[in-house]
Image (cartoon, rainbow, N blue to C red; front, top):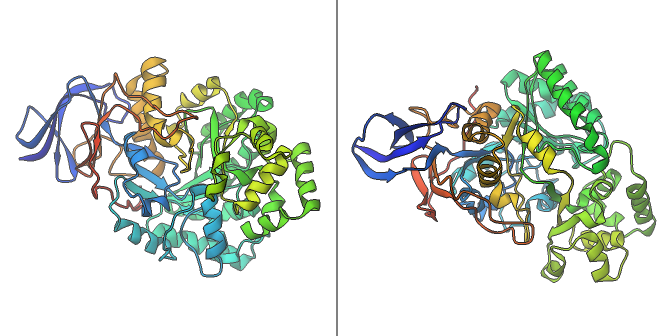
Length: 528
Protein backbone atom coordinates (compact mmCIF):
# COMPACT_ATOMS: atom_id res chain seq x y z
CA UNK A 1 0.00 0.00 0.00
CA UNK A 2 1.31 3.42 -0.97
CA UNK A 3 1.42 6.32 1.46
CA UNK A 4 -0.30 8.66 -1.00
CA UNK A 5 -2.07 8.46 -4.35
CA UNK A 6 -2.66 11.56 -6.46
CA UNK A 7 -5.20 10.61 -9.12
CA UNK A 8 -6.85 12.17 -12.18
CA UNK A 9 -4.33 15.02 -12.37
CA UNK A 10 -2.76 16.73 -15.36
CA UNK A 11 0.86 15.68 -14.94
CA UNK A 12 3.44 18.28 -15.98
CA UNK A 13 6.60 16.32 -15.34
CA UNK A 14 9.29 19.04 -15.39
CA UNK A 15 11.00 17.87 -18.59
CA UNK A 16 9.19 20.29 -20.89
CA UNK A 17 7.15 17.45 -22.40
CA UNK A 18 3.43 17.87 -23.06
CA UNK A 19 1.17 17.36 -20.03
CA UNK A 20 -0.78 14.12 -19.76
CA UNK A 21 -3.53 12.70 -17.57
CA UNK A 22 -2.34 10.19 -15.04
CA UNK A 23 -1.89 9.01 -11.50
CA UNK A 24 1.13 9.33 -9.24
CA UNK A 25 1.89 7.65 -5.93
CA UNK A 26 4.26 8.41 -3.08
CA UNK A 27 6.07 5.59 -1.30
CA UNK A 28 8.05 6.81 1.67
CA UNK A 29 10.20 9.65 0.28
CA UNK A 30 10.03 8.72 -3.41
CA UNK A 31 7.72 9.07 -6.40
CA UNK A 32 6.08 6.05 -8.01
CA UNK A 33 4.47 6.36 -11.42
CA UNK A 34 1.54 3.95 -11.33
CA UNK A 35 -1.19 2.52 -13.54
CA UNK A 36 -4.79 2.49 -12.36
CA UNK A 37 -5.68 3.32 -8.75
CA UNK A 38 -3.62 1.23 -6.35
CA UNK A 39 -4.43 1.26 -2.66
CA UNK A 40 -3.02 4.14 -0.63
CA UNK A 41 -3.34 5.46 2.89
CA UNK A 42 -4.55 8.76 1.47
CA UNK A 43 -5.98 9.65 -1.91
CA UNK A 44 -5.98 13.15 -3.42
CA UNK A 45 -8.30 13.75 -6.35
CA UNK A 46 -6.44 16.19 -8.61
CA UNK A 47 -9.10 16.46 -11.31
CA UNK A 48 -8.66 19.71 -13.21
CA UNK A 49 -5.38 20.39 -11.38
CA UNK A 50 -1.74 20.38 -12.41
CA UNK A 51 0.54 17.84 -10.73
CA UNK A 52 4.13 19.07 -10.96
CA UNK A 53 7.55 18.69 -9.37
CA UNK A 54 8.23 21.03 -6.45
CA UNK A 55 9.72 24.37 -7.45
CA UNK A 56 13.44 25.07 -7.02
CA UNK A 57 14.37 28.63 -6.01
CA UNK A 58 17.91 29.07 -7.31
CA UNK A 59 18.51 32.43 -5.59
CA UNK A 60 17.41 33.03 -2.01
CA UNK A 61 18.50 34.92 1.09
CA UNK A 62 17.19 32.70 3.90
CA UNK A 63 20.38 31.25 5.34
CA UNK A 64 20.07 33.09 8.67
CA UNK A 65 16.29 33.49 8.84
CA UNK A 66 15.71 29.73 8.61
CA UNK A 67 17.27 29.36 12.06
CA UNK A 68 14.28 31.28 13.44
CA UNK A 69 11.53 30.43 10.93
CA UNK A 70 12.62 27.13 9.37
CA UNK A 71 9.23 26.50 7.80
CA UNK A 72 9.92 29.40 5.37
CA UNK A 73 6.22 29.98 4.75
CA UNK A 74 6.59 32.80 2.17
CA UNK A 75 8.40 30.26 0.01
CA UNK A 76 6.29 27.22 0.84
CA UNK A 77 3.03 28.95 -0.10
CA UNK A 78 4.36 29.65 -3.58
CA UNK A 79 5.30 26.03 -4.17
CA UNK A 80 9.02 26.14 -3.43
CA UNK A 81 10.27 22.80 -2.13
CA UNK A 82 14.02 23.45 -2.52
CA UNK A 83 15.98 26.67 -2.27
CA UNK A 84 19.59 27.65 -2.79
CA UNK A 85 21.36 29.47 0.05
CA UNK A 86 24.41 31.77 0.28
CA UNK A 87 24.03 33.86 -2.84
CA UNK A 88 25.89 36.99 -3.99
CA UNK A 89 29.09 35.80 -2.35
CA UNK A 90 27.66 36.26 1.15
CA UNK A 91 26.79 33.39 3.46
CA UNK A 92 27.04 32.17 7.05
CA UNK A 93 30.06 29.91 6.39
CA UNK A 94 32.96 29.63 6.34
CA UNK A 95 33.77 32.24 8.98
CA UNK A 96 36.53 32.77 11.50
CA UNK A 97 36.88 34.45 14.87
CA UNK A 98 38.72 37.52 13.53
CA UNK A 99 36.06 38.54 11.03
CA UNK A 100 32.85 37.12 12.52
CA UNK A 101 31.59 40.36 14.11
CA UNK A 102 31.94 42.58 11.01
CA UNK A 103 30.63 39.77 8.80
CA UNK A 104 27.46 39.46 10.87
CA UNK A 105 26.85 43.16 10.25
CA UNK A 106 27.51 42.78 6.54
CA UNK A 107 25.14 39.82 6.31
CA UNK A 108 22.43 41.71 8.20
CA UNK A 109 22.41 44.34 5.48
CA UNK A 110 21.34 41.69 2.97
CA UNK A 111 19.49 39.06 4.98
CA UNK A 112 18.10 41.07 7.89
CA UNK A 113 19.02 40.93 11.55
CA UNK A 114 18.11 37.75 13.44
CA UNK A 115 18.97 36.73 16.99
CA UNK A 116 20.95 33.61 16.12
CA UNK A 117 23.87 31.91 17.83
CA UNK A 118 26.47 31.32 15.11
CA UNK A 119 27.73 28.01 16.50
CA UNK A 120 29.57 27.01 13.33
CA UNK A 121 32.66 28.07 11.41
CA UNK A 122 32.89 25.65 8.45
CA UNK A 123 30.40 24.88 5.69
CA UNK A 124 30.20 21.31 6.95
CA UNK A 125 29.31 22.50 10.48
CA UNK A 126 26.70 24.94 9.15
CA UNK A 127 25.00 22.30 7.00
CA UNK A 128 24.97 19.80 9.87
CA UNK A 129 23.36 22.47 12.04
CA UNK A 130 20.71 23.30 9.44
CA UNK A 131 19.86 19.62 9.04
CA UNK A 132 18.71 19.58 12.68
CA UNK A 133 16.12 22.30 12.06
CA UNK A 134 12.45 21.52 11.29
CA UNK A 135 12.80 22.67 7.69
CA UNK A 136 9.77 23.13 5.47
CA UNK A 137 11.58 23.02 2.11
CA UNK A 138 14.91 21.43 1.30
CA UNK A 139 17.96 23.68 1.12
CA UNK A 140 21.29 23.47 -0.66
CA UNK A 141 24.39 25.62 -0.40
CA UNK A 142 26.79 27.54 -2.60
CA UNK A 143 30.24 28.37 -1.27
CA UNK A 144 30.17 32.19 -0.92
CA UNK A 145 33.21 33.81 -2.50
CA UNK A 146 33.15 36.68 0.03
CA UNK A 147 33.52 34.18 2.87
CA UNK A 148 36.29 32.25 1.14
CA UNK A 149 38.21 35.47 0.61
CA UNK A 150 37.50 36.77 4.09
CA UNK A 151 38.76 33.74 6.01
CA UNK A 152 41.98 33.77 3.98
CA UNK A 153 42.80 37.48 3.69
CA UNK A 154 40.24 39.47 5.70
CA UNK A 155 38.23 42.33 4.25
CA UNK A 156 41.10 44.21 2.65
CA UNK A 157 40.95 45.70 -0.82
CA UNK A 158 43.98 44.06 -2.42
CA UNK A 159 45.09 41.24 -4.67
CA UNK A 160 45.82 37.89 -2.97
CA UNK A 161 49.35 36.57 -2.83
CA UNK A 162 50.05 33.26 -4.55
CA UNK A 163 49.84 31.52 -1.18
CA UNK A 164 46.52 33.22 -0.35
CA UNK A 165 45.08 32.27 -3.73
CA UNK A 166 46.07 28.67 -3.13
CA UNK A 167 44.44 28.80 0.31
CA UNK A 168 41.25 30.31 -1.17
CA UNK A 169 41.09 27.57 -3.79
CA UNK A 170 41.52 24.99 -1.01
CA UNK A 171 38.68 26.57 0.98
CA UNK A 172 36.43 26.27 -2.06
CA UNK A 173 37.36 22.62 -2.52
CA UNK A 174 36.67 22.02 1.18
CA UNK A 175 33.20 23.58 0.84
CA UNK A 176 32.38 21.45 -2.20
CA UNK A 177 33.60 18.35 -0.36
CA UNK A 178 31.13 19.29 2.40
CA UNK A 179 28.30 19.41 -0.15
CA UNK A 180 28.30 22.86 -1.77
CA UNK A 181 26.97 22.82 -5.35
CA UNK A 182 29.36 25.51 -6.56
CA UNK A 183 30.39 29.05 -5.70
CA UNK A 184 28.48 32.33 -5.64
CA UNK A 185 29.92 35.80 -5.89
CA UNK A 186 28.52 39.31 -5.69
CA UNK A 187 30.87 41.56 -7.60
CA UNK A 188 29.28 44.75 -6.27
CA UNK A 189 29.57 43.70 -2.62
CA UNK A 190 32.69 43.78 -0.45
CA UNK A 191 34.94 41.86 -0.30
CA UNK A 192 33.97 40.21 -3.64
CA UNK A 193 34.23 43.57 -5.39
CA UNK A 194 37.97 43.65 -4.63
CA UNK A 195 38.71 40.48 -6.60
CA UNK A 196 40.14 40.64 -10.11
CA UNK A 197 39.61 38.26 -13.00
CA UNK A 198 42.69 36.16 -12.20
CA UNK A 199 41.31 35.36 -8.75
CA UNK A 200 38.03 34.16 -10.26
CA UNK A 201 39.73 32.12 -12.98
CA UNK A 202 41.73 30.26 -10.35
CA UNK A 203 38.59 29.52 -8.34
CA UNK A 204 36.80 28.61 -11.57
CA UNK A 205 39.37 25.86 -12.19
CA UNK A 206 38.29 24.25 -8.90
CA UNK A 207 34.68 24.45 -10.11
CA UNK A 208 35.67 22.90 -13.45
CA UNK A 209 37.49 20.04 -11.72
CA UNK A 210 34.43 19.27 -9.58
CA UNK A 211 31.89 20.00 -12.36
CA UNK A 212 30.16 22.56 -10.17
CA UNK A 213 28.87 26.00 -11.09
CA UNK A 214 30.04 29.61 -10.95
CA UNK A 215 27.03 31.76 -9.93
CA UNK A 216 27.51 35.50 -10.18
CA UNK A 217 25.92 38.81 -9.46
CA UNK A 218 28.06 40.36 -12.15
CA UNK A 219 30.04 43.56 -11.70
CA UNK A 220 27.56 45.65 -13.67
CA UNK A 221 23.93 45.25 -14.66
CA UNK A 222 23.76 48.80 -16.00
CA UNK A 223 26.21 51.12 -17.83
CA UNK A 224 29.04 48.58 -18.07
CA UNK A 225 26.92 45.45 -18.52
CA UNK A 226 28.58 44.45 -21.80
CA UNK A 227 32.08 44.74 -20.35
CA UNK A 228 30.88 42.95 -17.22
CA UNK A 229 29.53 40.06 -19.27
CA UNK A 230 32.84 39.85 -21.11
CA UNK A 231 34.58 39.42 -17.76
CA UNK A 232 32.25 36.62 -16.66
CA UNK A 233 32.43 34.81 -19.98
CA UNK A 234 36.23 35.08 -19.95
CA UNK A 235 36.25 33.49 -16.49
CA UNK A 236 34.14 30.64 -17.84
CA UNK A 237 36.24 30.30 -20.98
CA UNK A 238 39.64 30.39 -19.25
CA UNK A 239 38.71 28.12 -16.35
CA UNK A 240 36.29 25.84 -18.21
CA UNK A 241 33.60 26.11 -15.52
CA UNK A 242 29.85 26.42 -15.98
CA UNK A 243 28.60 30.03 -15.73
CA UNK A 244 25.27 31.16 -14.28
CA UNK A 245 24.22 34.83 -14.08
CA UNK A 246 22.12 35.74 -11.04
CA UNK A 247 18.87 37.76 -11.38
CA UNK A 248 19.67 38.67 -14.99
CA UNK A 249 18.56 42.15 -16.08
CA UNK A 250 19.60 45.37 -17.79
CA UNK A 251 19.15 48.39 -15.53
CA UNK A 252 18.27 51.95 -16.45
CA UNK A 253 16.49 53.53 -19.40
CA UNK A 254 19.73 54.70 -21.00
CA UNK A 255 20.96 51.09 -21.09
CA UNK A 256 17.89 49.34 -22.48
CA UNK A 257 19.20 49.61 -26.05
CA UNK A 258 22.03 47.27 -24.99
CA UNK A 259 19.68 44.30 -24.54
CA UNK A 260 20.17 42.87 -28.08
CA UNK A 261 23.96 42.91 -27.58
CA UNK A 262 23.54 41.33 -24.13
CA UNK A 263 21.66 38.40 -25.64
CA UNK A 264 24.09 38.21 -28.55
CA UNK A 265 26.92 37.62 -26.08
CA UNK A 266 25.05 34.65 -24.63
CA UNK A 267 24.36 33.26 -28.10
CA UNK A 268 28.03 33.62 -29.03
CA UNK A 269 29.09 31.82 -25.83
CA UNK A 270 26.80 28.91 -26.67
CA UNK A 271 28.23 28.81 -30.18
CA UNK A 272 31.66 28.38 -28.58
CA UNK A 273 30.39 25.42 -26.59
CA UNK A 274 30.26 27.19 -23.23
CA UNK A 275 27.58 26.26 -20.70
CA UNK A 276 25.83 29.52 -19.74
CA UNK A 277 22.53 30.02 -17.92
CA UNK A 278 20.77 32.63 -15.81
CA UNK A 279 17.92 33.05 -13.35
CA UNK A 280 15.39 35.87 -13.16
CA UNK A 281 12.50 37.13 -11.06
CA UNK A 282 9.39 38.42 -12.91
CA UNK A 283 9.35 42.06 -11.78
CA UNK A 284 10.62 45.41 -13.09
CA UNK A 285 12.10 46.31 -9.69
CA UNK A 286 15.00 44.80 -7.76
CA UNK A 287 15.97 44.69 -4.10
CA UNK A 288 19.18 44.66 -2.08
CA UNK A 289 20.95 46.51 0.76
CA UNK A 290 20.71 50.31 0.69
CA UNK A 291 24.45 50.82 0.99
CA UNK A 292 24.91 49.76 -2.65
CA UNK A 293 24.08 53.38 -3.51
CA UNK A 294 27.45 54.36 -1.98
CA UNK A 295 30.57 54.40 -4.18
CA UNK A 296 32.76 51.27 -3.95
CA UNK A 297 35.58 52.98 -2.02
CA UNK A 298 33.21 53.73 0.86
CA UNK A 299 32.98 49.98 1.59
CA UNK A 300 36.73 49.40 1.97
CA UNK A 301 37.47 47.65 5.26
CA UNK A 302 33.90 46.59 5.98
CA UNK A 303 30.85 48.01 7.73
CA UNK A 304 32.66 49.75 10.58
CA UNK A 305 34.82 51.75 8.16
CA UNK A 306 31.77 52.56 6.04
CA UNK A 307 29.97 54.02 9.06
CA UNK A 308 33.07 56.03 10.05
CA UNK A 309 33.22 57.57 6.58
CA UNK A 310 29.57 58.63 6.82
CA UNK A 311 30.53 60.82 9.81
CA UNK A 312 33.13 62.68 7.73
CA UNK A 313 31.74 65.75 5.93
CA UNK A 314 34.54 65.87 3.36
CA UNK A 315 34.11 62.22 2.47
CA UNK A 316 30.33 62.67 2.23
CA UNK A 317 30.89 65.47 -0.24
CA UNK A 318 33.09 63.12 -2.28
CA UNK A 319 30.37 60.43 -2.13
CA UNK A 320 27.84 62.87 -3.55
CA UNK A 321 30.23 63.93 -6.27
CA UNK A 322 30.78 60.31 -7.30
CA UNK A 323 27.04 59.58 -7.24
CA UNK A 324 26.18 62.57 -9.41
CA UNK A 325 29.13 62.18 -11.80
CA UNK A 326 29.52 58.40 -11.77
CA UNK A 327 32.56 56.12 -11.64
CA UNK A 328 33.45 54.02 -14.70
CA UNK A 329 32.34 50.41 -14.23
CA UNK A 330 30.30 51.11 -11.08
CA UNK A 331 26.56 50.35 -11.00
CA UNK A 332 25.20 53.67 -9.77
CA UNK A 333 21.72 52.90 -8.44
CA UNK A 334 20.79 56.58 -8.08
CA UNK A 335 21.67 57.13 -11.73
CA UNK A 336 19.66 54.25 -13.19
CA UNK A 337 16.70 54.22 -10.76
CA UNK A 338 16.56 57.86 -9.63
CA UNK A 339 16.00 59.16 -6.11
CA UNK A 340 12.26 58.71 -6.62
CA UNK A 341 12.71 55.09 -7.77
CA UNK A 342 14.58 53.81 -4.68
CA UNK A 343 12.40 52.81 -1.71
CA UNK A 344 13.30 51.82 1.87
CA UNK A 345 12.25 48.25 2.75
CA UNK A 346 13.64 47.67 6.25
CA UNK A 347 15.70 49.31 8.99
CA UNK A 348 17.34 48.12 12.19
CA UNK A 349 15.70 50.26 14.86
CA UNK A 350 11.95 50.70 15.57
CA UNK A 351 12.16 54.50 15.69
CA UNK A 352 13.10 54.56 12.00
CA UNK A 353 10.36 52.22 10.81
CA UNK A 354 8.26 55.28 9.94
CA UNK A 355 10.56 55.71 6.93
CA UNK A 356 9.93 52.21 5.55
CA UNK A 357 8.07 52.46 2.24
CA UNK A 358 9.35 55.96 1.46
CA UNK A 359 11.49 56.73 -1.56
CA UNK A 360 14.59 58.87 -1.13
CA UNK A 361 12.84 62.08 -2.15
CA UNK A 362 10.13 61.40 0.42
CA UNK A 363 12.76 60.57 3.05
CA UNK A 364 14.38 63.95 2.42
CA UNK A 365 11.05 65.72 2.81
CA UNK A 366 10.22 63.77 6.00
CA UNK A 367 13.57 64.61 7.62
CA UNK A 368 13.98 68.14 6.28
CA UNK A 369 17.26 67.20 4.58
CA UNK A 370 18.63 66.94 1.08
CA UNK A 371 17.78 63.33 -0.03
CA UNK A 372 21.36 62.05 -0.17
CA UNK A 373 22.16 63.46 3.25
CA UNK A 374 18.97 61.91 4.57
CA UNK A 375 19.83 58.44 3.30
CA UNK A 376 23.50 58.75 4.33
CA UNK A 377 22.32 59.55 7.86
CA UNK A 378 19.89 56.63 7.85
CA UNK A 379 22.51 54.12 6.69
CA UNK A 380 24.90 55.46 9.34
CA UNK A 381 22.40 55.54 12.20
CA UNK A 382 20.94 52.12 11.34
CA UNK A 383 24.47 50.65 11.23
CA UNK A 384 24.10 49.75 7.54
CA UNK A 385 21.03 47.58 8.17
CA UNK A 386 18.75 49.24 5.62
CA UNK A 387 17.14 47.58 2.60
CA UNK A 388 15.89 48.96 -0.71
CA UNK A 389 13.64 48.27 -3.67
CA UNK A 390 14.70 49.94 -6.93
CA UNK A 391 12.77 50.26 -10.20
CA UNK A 392 15.09 49.56 -13.12
CA UNK A 393 13.38 47.91 -16.09
CA UNK A 394 10.47 47.25 -18.47
CA UNK A 395 7.86 44.53 -18.84
CA UNK A 396 9.05 43.98 -22.40
CA UNK A 397 12.52 43.02 -21.20
CA UNK A 398 11.20 40.91 -18.32
CA UNK A 399 9.26 38.85 -20.86
CA UNK A 400 12.14 38.73 -23.31
CA UNK A 401 14.59 37.36 -20.75
CA UNK A 402 11.96 35.01 -19.31
CA UNK A 403 11.39 33.47 -22.73
CA UNK A 404 15.05 32.61 -23.25
CA UNK A 405 16.02 28.90 -23.06
CA UNK A 406 18.85 29.72 -20.61
CA UNK A 407 16.39 31.14 -18.05
CA UNK A 408 15.07 29.56 -14.89
CA UNK A 409 12.89 31.24 -12.27
CA UNK A 410 14.16 32.53 -8.91
CA UNK A 411 12.82 34.80 -6.15
CA UNK A 412 15.96 36.56 -4.90
CA UNK A 413 13.69 37.05 -1.90
CA UNK A 414 15.13 39.33 0.76
CA UNK A 415 13.41 39.45 4.15
CA UNK A 416 12.28 42.84 5.43
CA UNK A 417 9.57 44.92 7.08
CA UNK A 418 8.22 45.78 3.63
CA UNK A 419 10.04 43.33 1.35
CA UNK A 420 9.96 43.10 -2.41
CA UNK A 421 6.79 41.16 -3.36
CA UNK A 422 8.94 38.56 -5.11
CA UNK A 423 9.62 37.04 -1.67
CA UNK A 424 5.98 35.89 -1.55
CA UNK A 425 4.82 35.71 -5.15
CA UNK A 426 7.43 34.93 -7.80
CA UNK A 427 6.48 31.44 -8.94
CA UNK A 428 2.68 31.86 -8.89
CA UNK A 429 3.16 35.18 -10.74
CA UNK A 430 4.87 33.33 -13.59
CA UNK A 431 2.09 30.73 -13.65
CA UNK A 432 -0.82 33.15 -13.26
CA UNK A 433 0.16 36.39 -14.98
CA UNK A 434 2.61 35.28 -17.64
CA UNK A 435 1.51 31.71 -18.46
CA UNK A 436 -2.27 31.59 -17.93
CA UNK A 437 -3.29 35.24 -18.47
CA UNK A 438 -0.76 36.45 -21.05
CA UNK A 439 0.13 33.17 -22.76
CA UNK A 440 3.86 33.93 -22.85
CA UNK A 441 4.64 30.21 -23.01
CA UNK A 442 2.79 26.90 -22.41
CA UNK A 443 2.47 25.38 -18.96
CA UNK A 444 5.07 22.69 -19.68
CA UNK A 445 7.67 25.37 -20.45
CA UNK A 446 6.81 27.35 -17.32
CA UNK A 447 7.10 24.29 -15.10
CA UNK A 448 10.36 23.23 -16.74
CA UNK A 449 11.82 26.67 -15.95
CA UNK A 450 10.85 26.21 -12.29
CA UNK A 451 11.92 22.61 -11.86
CA UNK A 452 13.89 20.55 -14.38
CA UNK A 453 15.87 23.45 -15.78
CA UNK A 454 16.93 24.58 -12.30
CA UNK A 455 17.93 21.02 -11.39
CA UNK A 456 20.05 20.77 -14.57
CA UNK A 457 21.80 24.07 -13.81
CA UNK A 458 22.71 23.00 -10.29
CA UNK A 459 23.53 19.35 -10.92
CA UNK A 460 20.67 18.23 -8.68
CA UNK A 461 20.11 14.61 -9.68
CA UNK A 462 17.28 13.32 -7.52
CA UNK A 463 14.54 15.93 -7.95
CA UNK A 464 13.17 18.48 -10.41
CA UNK A 465 11.14 15.91 -12.35
CA UNK A 466 8.22 13.58 -11.81
CA UNK A 467 10.03 10.33 -12.53
CA UNK A 468 9.79 6.97 -10.85
CA UNK A 469 12.20 6.68 -7.93
CA UNK A 470 13.05 10.38 -7.64
CA UNK A 471 12.44 12.32 -4.43
CA UNK A 472 8.78 12.99 -3.69
CA UNK A 473 8.75 16.77 -3.97
CA UNK A 474 5.36 17.25 -5.61
CA UNK A 475 2.79 20.02 -6.03
CA UNK A 476 -0.91 20.02 -6.85
CA UNK A 477 -1.79 23.40 -8.35
CA UNK A 478 -5.15 24.96 -9.22
CA UNK A 479 -4.58 26.45 -12.70
CA UNK A 480 -7.55 28.81 -12.40
CA UNK A 481 -6.60 30.46 -9.11
CA UNK A 482 -2.80 30.36 -8.95
CA UNK A 483 -1.49 33.93 -8.68
CA UNK A 484 0.69 36.25 -6.62
CA UNK A 485 -1.25 38.52 -4.27
CA UNK A 486 1.29 40.89 -2.74
CA UNK A 487 2.35 44.18 -4.31
CA UNK A 488 4.90 46.86 -3.46
CA UNK A 489 2.48 48.51 -1.02
CA UNK A 490 1.37 45.34 0.79
CA UNK A 491 3.92 42.67 -0.13
CA UNK A 492 3.46 40.29 2.81
CA UNK A 493 0.62 38.27 1.34
CA UNK A 494 0.83 34.55 0.67
CA UNK A 495 0.34 33.48 -2.93
CA UNK A 496 -2.75 31.51 -3.94
CA UNK A 497 -3.36 28.33 -5.87
CA UNK A 498 -0.89 25.85 -4.37
CA UNK A 499 -3.40 23.27 -3.18
CA UNK A 500 -0.89 20.69 -1.96
CA UNK A 501 2.87 20.80 -1.44
CA UNK A 502 4.73 17.61 -0.65
CA UNK A 503 8.39 17.59 0.42
CA UNK A 504 10.18 14.26 0.69
CA UNK A 505 6.80 12.57 0.88
CA UNK A 506 5.43 14.79 3.66
CA UNK A 507 2.50 17.14 3.05
CA UNK A 508 3.39 20.68 4.16
CA UNK A 509 0.53 22.44 2.33
CA UNK A 510 -2.73 20.50 2.69
CA UNK A 511 -5.78 21.86 0.84
CA UNK A 512 -4.14 25.29 0.85
CA UNK A 513 -3.32 25.25 4.57
CA UNK A 514 0.13 25.03 6.14
CA UNK A 515 0.99 21.92 8.15
CA UNK A 516 4.42 22.79 9.63
CA UNK A 517 6.68 19.80 10.26
CA UNK A 518 10.21 18.64 9.54
CA UNK A 519 9.95 17.73 5.88
CA UNK A 520 12.96 19.33 4.21
CA UNK A 521 16.59 18.35 4.45
CA UNK A 522 20.00 19.63 3.44
CA UNK A 523 20.86 18.45 -0.06
CA UNK A 524 24.57 17.86 -0.70
CA UNK A 525 26.42 17.79 -4.00
CA UNK A 526 27.65 14.34 -5.01
CA UNK A 527 28.54 15.00 -8.65
CA UNK A 528 26.44 15.30 -11.78
